[in-house]
Image (cartoon, rainbow, N blue to C red):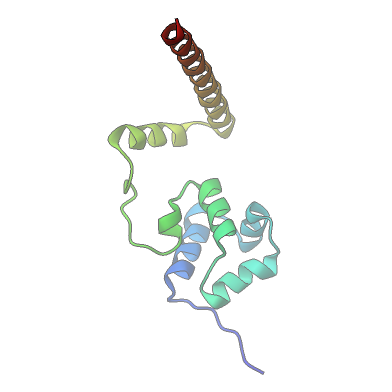
Length: 130
């Protein structure tokens, strides 16, 4: 029988271990976040890979870059404009309930802008038809 061993030096396993250490969560916590079994999480450490869906859920829940979680060497600010980085820094300082409130506010504002744009475009089309 082939013995399973953890891929301790694999980039994704290094990141998962770093998350456990820095965020103070367990493999069971990771399983709950991703909606998978504890055995699935243990397999990430054995195989050295995490599934795409689980990686997205974990990165989102823990506020880490997906690219970083997948083992890529990235600057934490990689791919973000200065205003986006500042917004993210401020967002992460908020309590979780306030983070959810801010997301709702952004969604409402985006819907308002979409409606305004649609109303504007209908007005332009009518005025061009006259």
